Each structure stands twice: as structure tokens, then as C-alpha cells.
Length: 355
Image 1 (cartoon, rainbow, N blue to C red):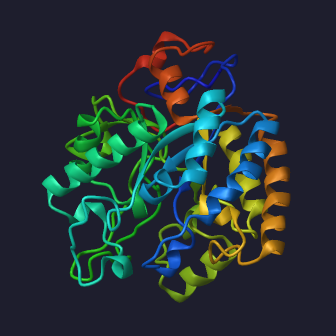
Image 2: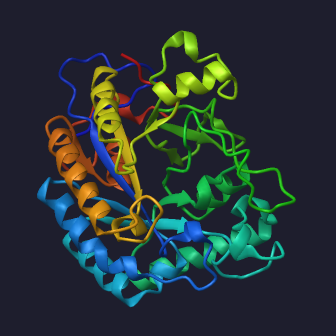
């Protein structure tokens, strides 16, 4: 695998390898947006089609797996196959409200879906430990990659992941605030990532918003702001801000919704111009099934999704190399099998990449 090197500044070499295309799938139960008390996992049956598409383009997804999927026989069979063939990676995705040990935090945890960061630290540690052991036992792996449920992350969480020997986190969503999204109704909402880096960096376990010297690599999901520079200081809640945001949304994500193919193509083209070392695509496993999410309610919407994925993947493969999260980490820190990365890639503090 070859990926573009990451250094403490910009990448200057004209002969650097291709950047990485990272596919991350939050692998979880069906339509959790509906807050079901009885969580089903029918979407596990629909992963083969997506995996086959990825393989046809040379891409290797990372399936960030939560509790109900880890114990789903259909998913287990699928996951063991892709692990055996080296065609994908299995990492952890933790939904605090239904991941053992079950310790009620609110009047109805399935309704409010509290953030893991709202639980006491000993409970956080035990949930991470139990979920990690579950993945080890079910799939015979040592999970190294992680994304939090509902994008929740803080310094305590980062230290616990580091203690558990995780190598890569991808919970940071740059340019995005979840402060208005409550978990515990008596809480203060989710994290605010608006000032976080949008390039890879090793976490400072005392301040996760800046680079540090830990062994835990943060790979923020790819989000870009295409608004004109003059508009970025305008409050999005103002009338002018709402008009500007409608014309050019502040947060363009590398996440398909059936309507944003053009924006996703613009993101990867901009990433090439900025000489980024990777782009990180994300989707939920349930979004690959008709009726599994609000975005794709029926079979026609799923077919549109796959049409968009075909066009998107076809463009991406011309400039990017497929990799899992851990493959990217190893190429960055160790050189990785087959990687062509200079020694500068072992730098422990990674700044924004801008061309």
C-alpha cells in the first residue's frame, strides 16, 4: 500500500505516493434514528453487496462494529470472511445505551441515547473493556480502530482507548458542533469540534483538540467548508447566514445521502488540490438497506445510492489508494508492508495539510 506522507507541515515532494481512501462504516442495528427498544440487525444481510462493490474498485472498508452487530450470526459470518481474505477491517463502535454493562443513566436510555462521555469513568472503562473483549472473541482479532457512538469524545475517552491499546480513532467531525444534540436530557449536549484539526494528528490526551505525543492517532472524518471566506464569520442562525448556508452548506461531508454526489466529488477534488494524505468516507451499515434509515426509505433510494457510489468510486480510484484505518496507521508509523513512505512520516505531531 502507498499513501501520501504526513509530516509536521505541508507535503512538498512532487513524487509523493497517492493519498489514501478510507471507507468507514458505522456497523450497527436497523434505523436507530427511530430510537427502537428492540434493535434488529437485518441490514447485516445487505453488506455483501457493498463489500463486493468496494472490492471491485480495490477499496477496503473498516467496519466499526457495535454490540448488536457483534452478536448477530449473519454479520459474524460476513466479518469472518472479509477478515480471512484481508478484504476489510473490523473495529469498534460503541453505543453506550445498549452496550454492556447496562447501567441506566436516564429515565429511558433507548429513547435518549446518552453519550458514553456522560457516564462515570469506571462505567466508561468497563463498557470499552467488554466491547473490546466481545470483538476479540467473536472475530479472533485485536481491534485497533474505533469510532464513538454519536460522535462523543473527550479526554477521558481518549485515555481509556489508549489504555485498551487502540491505535486509531476517527470520532472527530471537524467544523461540526453537537452541543445542541442532547443525550442525557439533563446533560450539556455533545462535543464541539468546530476548532479541531481536519488532518491526521496524534492525540494530546490532556487536550484532544490539539496534537500531542500519545500513540493514539486521530483521523478526522472528511468535512469541508466551501462557503466564501467572507461568509464564514456570519452566524448561521442569522437571515443572511441561513441564505448562504442554503446556497453553500458550511459542512460538506464525505457521506452519501442520495442527493450530494456533486458535493462529494468536489471534496475529493479539493483534497487532491490541498495534497491531503487521505479522505475519509463514512456511512452507516443500516443505510445500505431499504428502510434502514431516514435517508434511504425504499428500494429506489438504495439503487440511487449505488449509482452514486459507482460514479464516486470510479473517480476516487484514479487518484487514491484504498486502505483500512489500521493500514494507514501502520504505513504512517512503521512504513507498512509495501508502503513507500519517508522517515519523516514518523513525526509524532501532525499539523494541517494545506497546499
